[in-house]
Length: 360
Image (tube, rainbow, N blue to C red; front, top):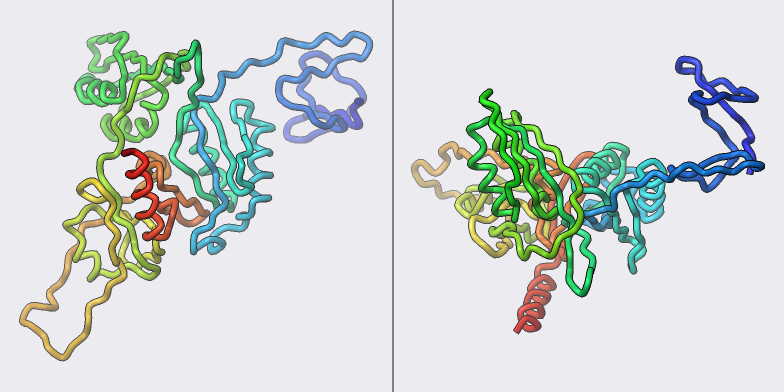
């Protein structure tokens, strides 16, 4: 194959030229099916350069075409073709990202070097007008000598001295092991941990909260190690809407002691949408659109002002961290919603009964 056009840059302008020299920054046209790491050389003396090596992916997430009752209300791009083309385009410029087809046409597996990298892609696509859903991140394991091994990370923390205890405790819960500690006597401490990659899923937002934005965290891939066993996950259930409608103040007052809400009064919800976190284990399905029945009878003090606790506003990272295996994050240009993978309550109960039966 040959170039059809060759360009150099002068300021912000692109200028077509006939030849270039070593060191020039160029652009070209006319060669198809080229990717990062390929070498373009002389036909008479083809000497390829060493290919760029990139650390293998450690985390995967499933991207679903949005099928919620509110699909198509906010976004411009929501079909399987739109999602597939956008993900394929991303792999051309992002060499550490892999997109793998699944046995379903409307589901794509995206693999990356961490949930943060995939979260950045999700946020970018959301701002571009895409609508889709994503699953809980999963680490990519493999088998070596008949044993399951998982990816490991070295984590480097630069934190205030008074935050060492709380962060050490939280990383230990996530199977982290301290390798090094350096106290420079300046009020800040450097920590180094070895931890499974899955132990870092959702940790960044906790880290920023615990250090009040004063901490610095970096990580480095550290090979694979035998599976470390289960890591504690969310031990609380979800508050789930049981019908479509608008959230009412009256309904919020009635469930205020059941958990913490994620949505404001007046928000449109649908059957199977997660509206909050329950204060105990197990999901609770409830009517968040219930209105007060009007009668001619009034009791003294019945119309007093009602004060509700402000709902907890979750960021995209916090939503990805919060969801369980049977839940999804619905992402649109205007909204980020949490939902059950199966919206129908009866089907969810049937699935749980089957899982319980099979486990016995």
